[in-house]
Image (cartoon, rainbow, N blue to C red):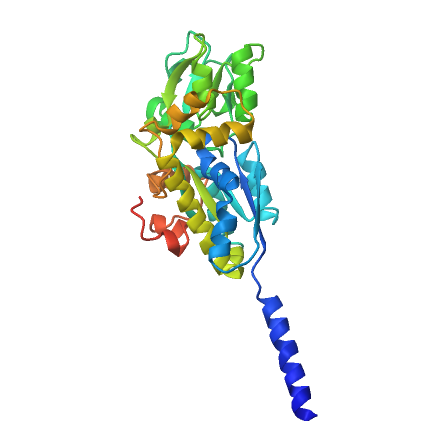
Length: 331
């Protein structure tokens, strides 16, 4: 009788332990809009996370993918536990890392991509950043915190000697809304610091021209977006984290080998009218890369730290990322 009681208690303890330490059966991915976040489109279409989780012995795991128009919305989603893994512009990620070091501890899984972001204009008088006047307004995803906002500040410092020289002219607007404003010419927006595919869509219009590239800020390519999560989610779901990591690398490889099919997936999920060949050409552009290595991250962080946007200076780029990424050749 006593043996049976002990066995029953042991069974209950094992059952409780299994449920207490079970990993999540769902991963909520949230991303910004555009080709910079192409891995999540491919993962969604090919169910790469679900398959990686099954290979890891995690059983039936589902993934959801949500697009949001601004980095602020994505930051809020991650910090309020309404997202598990996010694809977000580099400056917004760096800001989260800086502000959560003693708390939630947001870190990167890997770089999501590098791609140039263009500042375009429909004002024929604007040839460079020096030509903007009080009559102009520059649309970008989020004032002061988006990739484009930081790149604009870095270029302003190099060109005008003052990092916030044109901040007063910037207006927060999603990529689709900013593109609509540029193409219609009906709003006060005379310039747009955007990303692919929106910048190339705009440049199809002969009235719109490229003024500069985000690569001008760092004198070469730089990471555009990062994949990130919070430490507690990673710690609670070690196998699922690894499955997600592997699924992202699988998506990188798929994009490199199948740019046209990746374009078809993007067009279908975004329900865009952009021609598939047009999107595939962008994906294959040598200036684009969906490799996981961070590029010029420390240069961008150093600038944001110098101007007071970030308080804590990391010793190396590895401090910004979880250990799985530390062997990558980043900077």
